[in-house]
Length: 176
Image 1 (cartoon, one colour):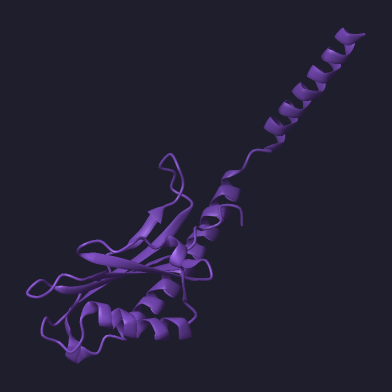
Image 2 (cartoon, rainbow, N blue to C red):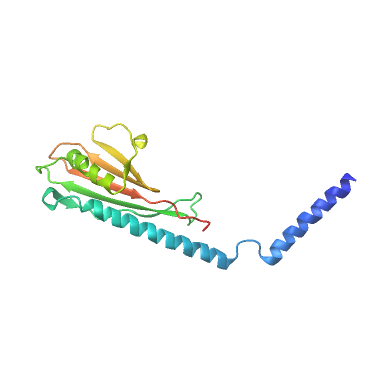
């Protein structure tokens, strides 16, 4: 009796595998293309949002205090293991150098920026922050599924008086 049940189970499994192979139960090429198109659309939305928020943050630096504003040096990154192309996330990163003899230090600038960030919906995430080191500290914020890091350099002039800002988007959804 046991032998019959084993054979019957194997027959059902084999029939299921054959059925899937013949009917295309595996993801078809057109379905794969739909998933990629959906993730590309999601990623573009993430890019647009992070770039807009980043531009708003950089705009908070008064021109009379800023010696240099660096280009965005972020971009999209693979979020999956094994070097798979998808899912991805977006990483916006931009830096600002203040004048060494300007009215505020980078720490004072970051302190002044914090209330504005909170008004924009950014919430400080103290649990992610590490103690300051000799040359810098980082303040972490979240807004929905996005994260923001404000890296503040505390080295005195003549060293550059720098702040770096990083926004990281959520990952694209591989199962839209």
